[in-house]
Length: 210
Ligand code: SAH
Image 1 (cartoon, rainbow, N blue to C red):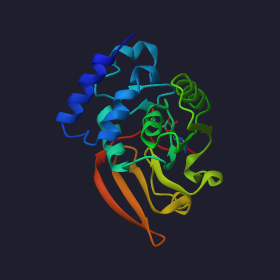
Image 2 (image 1 turned 180 degrees about the vertical axis):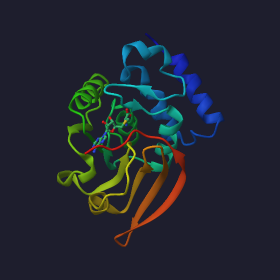
Image 3 (image 1 turned 90 degrees about the vertical axis):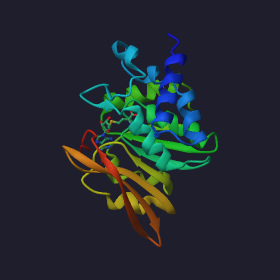
Image 4 (image 1 turned 120 degrees about the vertical axis):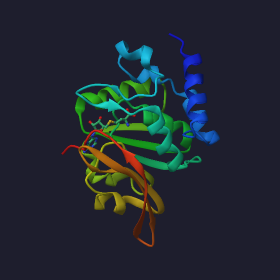
C-alpha cells in the first residue's frame, strides 16, 4: 500500500499546527513510513494524529507528540542517542534519519516480544545505525556511553541517576516525568555535571516497567 499522499497531508497538518518546524524533523517524517511500524489492521489509520496500539497493551505515540519531542531533541547529524522504550521502532527510525550515517541510535525495550517487533521493523526499513536491545532502560546502557541525547518514551517517575551519569556534558534528556495518569514533558540539559530542567507541557505515556 502506498500512503505517500496521506503522509504528506499529515506533515502539512503538523506544520500548520506548529508541531513540525525544522527542516531536519520534517524530512525525517517524510522518509519514515509510519504504516510499516504498526499492526496490519491499523494501517489505514497510520496517518491520523492518534496513538495506536502495538503489542501487549503498548502504544506508538501520536505523531504530534513525536514531533514535539524530536523538535526538542534538535539532532543535527552524528549524535549518539539512547532511547528508552523502542516500542515499534518508529521513533528510533526517525532519529536514525536525523543523526545520519555517522550517528548511532541504541534503543532499549523492556518487553522481549516488542524488542523483536521493533528490530524486525527497523531491519525491513534498513536502518543500519539502529541497535535494538532487550532490557530495562532505567539503568541506561553503560557500554555505549556517553550519549548526546537520552530520549525516554515511557512515563518515568524520575530522571534516573544512570541517565545523568551516562549523558555527555552539554547533552539532553527528554522524558515524560510523572505518574500513571499524566506526566510533564521534561527537557533536562547537563551542564557542569548538573541537570537543568525545563517543562514542556502535559502528556500521557504508558508507564516504565521494571
Ligand atoms: N518509542 C516507541 C513507543 C514507545 S511506547 C515507538 O516509537 O513506537 C513505550 C515503550 O516503553 C513500550 O514498548 C514499553 O514496553 C517500553 N518500556 C517500559 N518500561 C521500560 C523499561 N524499563 N526499559 C525499556 N523499555 C521500557
